[in-house]
Length: 75
Image (cartoon, rainbow, N blue to C red; front, side, top):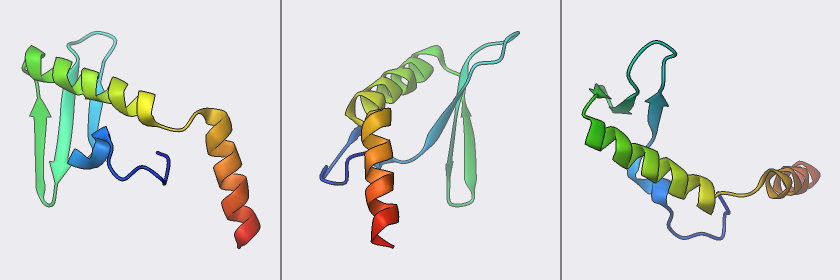
């Protein structure tokens, strides 16, 4: 995520989308000592949409490489 961003779609916390080859796509969230599998199709769709927004807001691979090279050069 660009460091100049004050807010972004990923600030709500981490999550995983799990899409097994022979099964139903689910989401998974963890916070502190709690873990939850998200199986409701509408909730999974919301997580998929959120993932798409995060990807759109994130640095491109080229921008990520430039950022890492800059950070490594500063150490």
